[in-house]
Image (cartoon, rainbow, N blue to C red; front, side):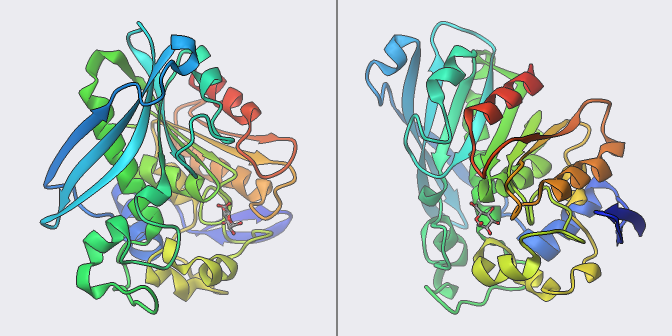
Length: 330
Ligand code: GCU
């Protein structure tokens, strides 16, 4: 255990381990184990889903991923915005709260003007953000064992964050089919809040992402849990037990017993890049604890690859946050 100070209070966090060990513990105890690769995967495309998008500076296609998993079919839509007539584009995979393009959390035309391609999907199209494990991808995995309520999963079976992260990997599978159109040295997985937690898990597990960005991810995201202000394991497990595996429940009011803390998630991204963003007034997420997460993980990263920053204001994925992320990637 390593002793650290969170707001002047001494807390001890488990020391970092190998990437494999940390990813194993995090899946075993917190998020649940992600499903394996799909048995079959193909894509269909509705070209120019939004006609005349951005005055023709970019094309917006709607793609459907057709998946076979555990012998069962599953599909979900996502959106692909490609600036016209350019090669080797840096790109974002943005796990979003809705299907809209642009979206209040995704200023798409500005991102196009910055030269980025953008893939995005509505997380509810993968499996809904509730305790219903019969819905979407969850239904495919849990099948007849699932129910709409009171369903008990095995202790380290995946919760919904793990399933959304898995879907983002399938979007990366599609990006790979575009070859030289994209610059894979500038591939970014990103998300806000609960989807910031999801982006961190996806980026930690999937080394194809060169950059990982969490915005205001807070508890069970970038923030160190021990000594944290605002949201605690009790709050998140009582309101959102379905985001995690069942094992996580045992740490309610027992954070000190966790064989991990959130620096494990951040350190698993090394030696690639991670940027954890906070908002100064987002005390529920706790900017100080998010900064500490990056500090505790930074020892395993090359200089400048792990960063934290605080924007003024409230919990939101704002243009300022996107611009900061763009500067980090560039
Ligand atoms: C709640 C939850 C947070 C989460 C946030 C969000 O506030 O307690 O953990 O990050 O919702 O996703 O907006």
